[in-house]
Image (tube, rainbow, N blue to C red; front, side):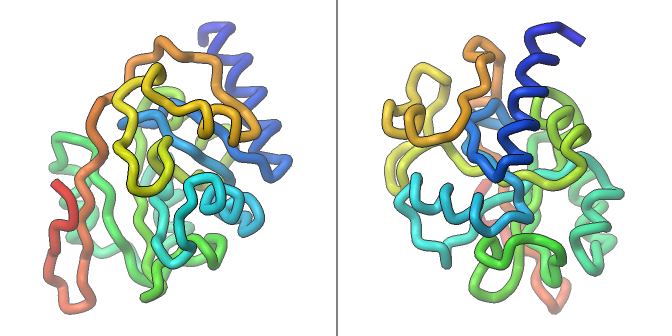
Length: 190
């Protein structure tokens, strides 16, 4: 592994373990993150984004095993959607467990995306817990398409900025799909 990336992983893990927030390259766009099981850290992100806590945030996991550890029942339909997806896809699951309560939607569900490569995947693998992944902007403002578009308020508001500004991220947020209790699939964002 590249020594710069390794150094950034170590710094980022220290921040996550200290209940801090970070700005990092996700598998889609630059995101704000923290330990998804820590309510104090999650509250810091809501405050930074000026977003009400009832509007849930997305979490990232590193694979099926972690997904099954944090969701009571992973429907077969979800596994099929993930395996057939051609771009990053977030699925809203019912019956999550072990997440910070203030991370859940009003109906108790949670939005989770599985990463398979890149900095975020390696970070989650080493942290061994899900992390929050929300766009690096104040609520209601456009999501930045590159590191250069991130506002000073966000850059100064997180506890740590991953020093990989030239890393390539996708410029689009993920597709979001809700699996309803009745088995139907609802596309929230394409």
